[in-house]
Image (cartoon, rainbow, N blue to C red):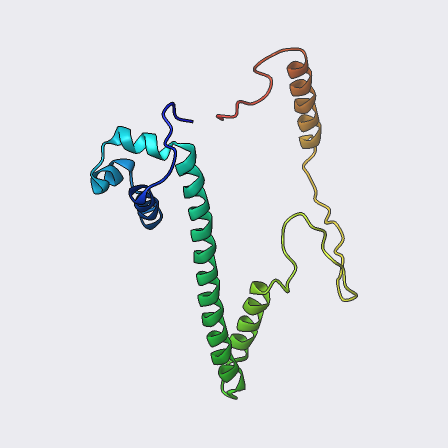
Length: 169
């Protein structure tokens, strides 16, 4: 909160809010120059509670409007793409791989495919669970690795700072 507070907003203050919404990422120096005001006056106004509240509401409304417009345009483009896809699928000469690829991508975009991440996979009847493969190791390798782990654990537990490898390498 600024030491000096303005009590209400006038047309110049509202024009500043409009400018901020229309020019995201611009510096306050550019705003001060465009509004023909000093940077200190601009700072007082912009940090006042009244201005912050009005700007926050305007920004939220602006973001909602922009999001709505983008969603509407995206839906329009998507529906047009599906119309074209219908024509391609109906064409007997279309490569089956193209149809399969389009169907796969469409299903993924509509989230009809399992997502990656930490969620468990659902097993279906046709799923085959592979056995763990067995790997052979040369004699002595496992014993040397175990000894190295014991040393590292022992030395790090008892305070040797050099026991564990450095994160830098």
